[in-house]
Structure formats: C-alpha cells, structure tokens
Length: 629
Picture 1 (cartoon, rainbow, N blue to C red):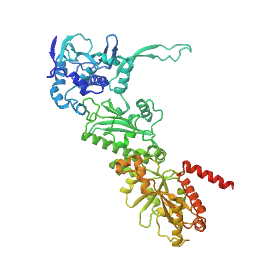
Picture 2: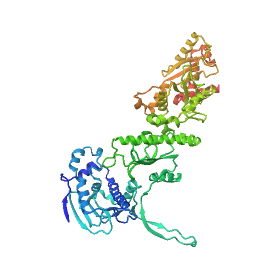
Picture 3: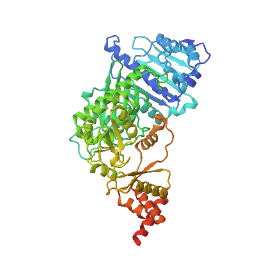
Picture 4: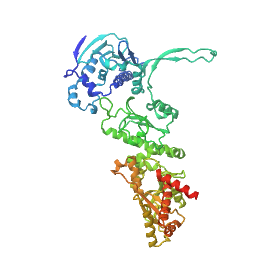
C-alpha cells in the first residue's frame, strides 16, 4: 500500500474547490459521468486502431445508490487505470498548478478558462462527498488498484481485486448532501445533464413486457422480464446525418427535447460544420406569432453530448434566442465548471455561421414552396424582423425571404412590392411612400380611404415593426413608411394636384379660432385642410414621427435610441370644404357652436378609439338624448 500527499502546497485545497470553482454542486455527477464516457470512448478508439487487444463489446456506464452505506457509485467499462496512472492523473496532474490557480483565480474563479489546465473535473466529487474511492483496473494486464482520499491532501493507493476492466468511483455522501442519495434527484440530474451522452447509462432496472406469439390464446398473459433501465439516448438526431433522418425523426426528437410541448414546430435547420470549428445541432422554429417570451424551452448547449447550459447568449444571435433546439460544439470555450462562456473569437464565428445558416434556410424554404412559406409567415415574422434589425449580415440577405403582407391578404417580397406601388405611391419629390396599418379593424376607415385612391396598404402588426421600418428607411433609398392614420389620405402621398377651397382666408381664420376656443386641449393641433366636401369634417391623426418614437420606446427603443418620454400629441384635421365647417361659421349662438364642435370631436375620437372612461359615458348619454328628442 502506498500513502502520500497530493502535490499541493496549501494545507487543504478542497474547501477552495467547493467555494470558488463550482457554484452549482449538482454538476459533480455530470463531471464524473463525462470522465466515464471519455474512458469508454478512449477504449473504443484504441481497439479500433489495434492498440488495445481486448474486446470492446457493448460497454455501459452504471449509476447506483446504496442508501445503507450512504454511497453513490459511478461504474464504467472503459479504459481503466494502472496504479502508475492513478498516481499521475489523480495525484499529480490535477494539482500540478494548484498554487498558481489559487493565486490567479481565487477571486475570479467563475470567469477562469482553466479546463484542461488543472484537470479538476474529478475533484468536483468532494463538493458532495467527505470521502471518495476509486477502484480501477486497466485494459492492460496489470493489477487493479484502490485510491482513497477523505478530502484532505492525504491519500492511500493499494492493489485490490477487480474482475472487470474499467473504473468505479465510490462517493461517500456528506451529511449536508444526502439529497444525492435519493433516486428521484439522481434521475433528475441524469436527465438534465446526460440525456444524450454517447454511451448508454444504466440507472436501475425496469420491467419489460415480452410480446405474445401470434398464435397465443386470447386469455394468454404476457411474460415480463427485468432489463437494464437505460436512461439516455446515445444517438440523438443531431449526431445523425440529415440524409438519414425523416421529418418524423425530427419531430420525435423535438418532443424528446421538450416533452411538455404538444405543438409541432414549423420546420427545422440542421447544423453541421467541421471547419473552421466543429459544430452540430438542430434548431426548430416554433409557432411564435407576436410572442416575445423566451424564458421557457430555450436552446440547449452541449459539449460532446454533455449538457452545459441553456443560457446561450453570445453563441446564438439574439434574434434566434426565440427558437428552440440544440447546439453541440467541442470548440466552445467554457470555464472550469462549464457553466459560463468565455469571450473568444470562435464564439463570434459560430454566431456568424448560425446566422448565415438560418438565412440560407429561409431562402430555400420560400423558393421551394412559396405558398406554404406565406402560410407560416405570421408565426415566424418576429424572428425574421428581429434579425433584420439586429444582425447586419442577416439584414443583407433578408430581402430574399422577408414578406410584406397587405390588409387584403397578399404577400410581397421587397422588389415585388416596389414594382407594384412605384407608379401610384411615389410622391411629387420622387419618394416611394409605403402605407401600412398596424390594426386592420381599428384603422379600417383610414385603410378604406387609401384603397379608394388605389393605394396598397401593408399590414405590419408585430411588436417590433417601428424598429423594422426605421431600419428599412435607413437602408433603402428615397423610401418612407407612413401609417395610414398619420394624416389625411391627401397628405400622406403629396401630389402636384390643384386644391379647391370653398372658404376665403378670413373664413378659415375664423373657423380655426372657433374650433380652438371650443376644444382648448393642448394635445390637439388644429390643422385646416381643403378636402373633398364628402370627406369627414373632423379627422384625428397622429404625426408619424411622434407615434413611431412612442412605439419604439414601448418595445425597447428608449434604450436603443436614448429617447425620453413622449407626450400624447394629435392633429385634428378640419375639413374646411365640408358642410359642417360652413354650419359652424353660420351658427351664431356660442354655446350651440361649442356643442357642435365638441360632438364632432367626440365622433373623431371614437373612430380612433380615443374616447374612453367618463368622456365615453357622457357622449353616449348625450347621443341618447339627441335621438329621444
């Protein structure tokens, strides 16, 4: 038997591991099973190249609980270790730089990129155990050994008996960690971190019902047998070539990832790249519509099929955080506890690749089946629009697959839209005016006025539309977006057309004064217009710039554009050619005149959904009084 001290110059490093290195104690199981997987796959490689002259077989990793002994066992059938290798890899390598680690990383351990530098994954076991044993037998023809350490720098190493090759880690669970002796807790951790590990993981047994033979009598009872309960799927869909997968395979995998999602995703993107970095994965487009909630069922990050985190900001561009799925890359730089991403050039390259892959997928989908793509547009538009606003590389390709729906249910790509409207919606200064509505019902009268003029009106109703149109106006030449209720239709697209006025300047001045005195509301700017005599006498509009800035602020534009609060400001467009304008001028009784103007204003407010509360109640009562006379 050998006794010795682990190569560390401080009295006890284990409390420091516990305190600084791993903030989340439960990941000890992930680390130990990852080691067992590595040992198994190393043996597979050595047998395949003829360096290990043993039968690889069908190895598995077993996790066992012994409640009486208060122990947790992780057993593999992998490469194993000799006594010399235990001395080297467990006692020396792991702490060869311990002193340097303490000096360099004790204050910033969560940000320290030191995986592989210190080999500390195994020692995460001491977060939950007050004694750890290793019983291991190498594939080489050498005796098995047992290593024991109680969490101090002292250890014992001695020869022992072990029939099969591989390694068994025995954790003597500490009193403050007895939750890890509960089957439910271990099963939860295995499903969280090891659900897709490449080596089968056994956790207990299950009862399997054997199929009845075809000629069995009707009252025959099927026999059962106890079989290994394999808790993981060693070959998840992202590890299989896309050509070997059907749409059913992808759907099955989606529900394996998200068991509580009952709705099918719209489509998927299979990622597979091996240069200049390694990355595989599958991204799914769920039905998003206008829902920006990304707190649930997020994209999962794996490293060699080991779950790392579902906080993938940095690897996945912000606009794709609305998607679901898996990304697996051995090249993603992580800190020692694999819980935090490190700032690295590779991460930016991965993010750029994913952005390009999604753009290419969108292009292929619309080209392959335009009709189907249009049907799905409302469920994916937020992702596309968000990408158009936030990712320049994505925006450069977005014209190929971004759709612009109209209030009539037609869909245009950008070049199709401009070809359609340039002859009728170009103003006198040569600017292309794109009219849009955000709510077809609330803005119906304004939409109708535009359609009567032969104009096309888009329906842009996602929560980030203000940002989208701001981006488009900045990137397209001589293009302006204007909401249909931003002004009277005659003013939305200025043309060189003669204007006929029924009132002279003195009458107009008097009319404006009458309206201002009756209303006395600072949020309304009175705007006289010589419109068609059949047009509404009063129309409320909100200036495009002011309304758009308010909308942008409501969806994060305040931070993006540094704006403060915006007051409620409206234009009251008074049709000076209407019969109502003439009636105001002819009404001599001041009270009657004020009532007329206020009633017309209430009607205009009602059409814009601005008449609420007491104002609406009073208006209804006055209206009933009028019809009762």
